[in-house]
Image (cartoon, rainbow, N blue to C red; front, side, top):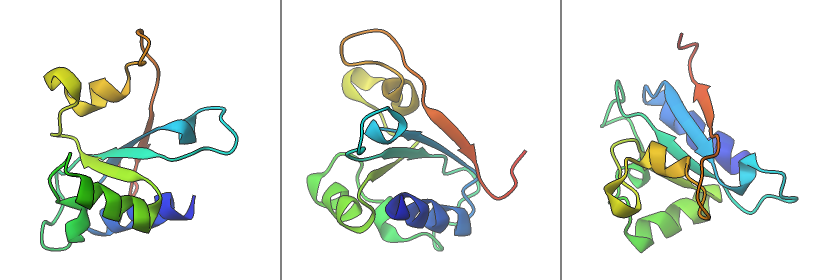
Length: 111
């Protein structure tokens, strides 16, 4: 939870107003193994955001740095998942087929 809060706080300080949370963190798994966050770059000050968030989306090293610092991963909403599917939609698909929910969080009092 501390890593999720720390990462989301850095995004919010840079102007991010919307994140989507996924991963075992939003399941009944005890204890959860990780979390995945998709963040919306609209309104984000690129100079005010920690560079770890701007790394190429599917390169191992930057994701490893995110996992080391936050115990989870943060991807911008323009990222794509397997098969070229927009990442927010990809997060809503179950591996075995069908759909699942993700948690949308509005930051900074966004309406």
